[in-house]
Length: 172
Image 1 (cartoon, rainbow, N blue to C red):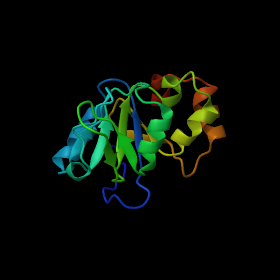
Image 2 (tube, helix red, strand yellow):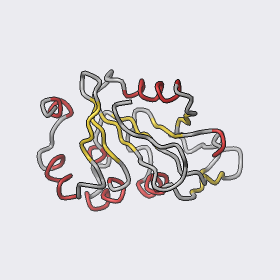
Image 3 (cartoon, helix red, strand yellow):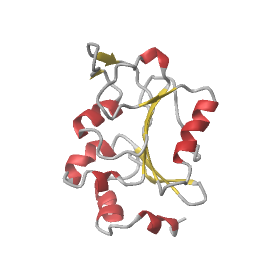
Image 4 (cartoon, rainbow, N blue to C red):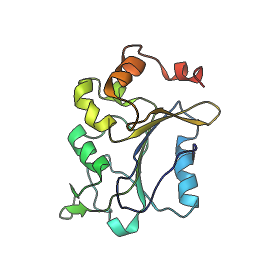
């Protein structure tokens, strides 16, 4: 699980994760490992149909091949862990009350996907999650820690230099 710590208590501030890496480095395998350890996973809806979601049925949420699938305001509410209204296609809205880990698997950094959004508008999202880069050896590295880094560091490290994912390989 890339050496990251995940809490499933649903209480307090629950860490959220953006897992980034090239294809075939084990991002999905991470989800499989969590499930094999007995944690119940909910694959987030990209179609805005959450009718099959229920707080009591799942321990964490995840999204595969994350693109700019969600509006930032919705994503921020989801990552915050507070109550949020989820839409269902054929049922009335569901209220998500449980604070649980959310894992976003992606081949891209958040600013690459939300490129029409200013970094200042992306900052609340970044401040709600760790970004973990998975290298070709399937090892995870925390490259963004919202508790110890600030937006200026993010800009200098990831935006101004415009590194590609392959560029991170040489850092570890």
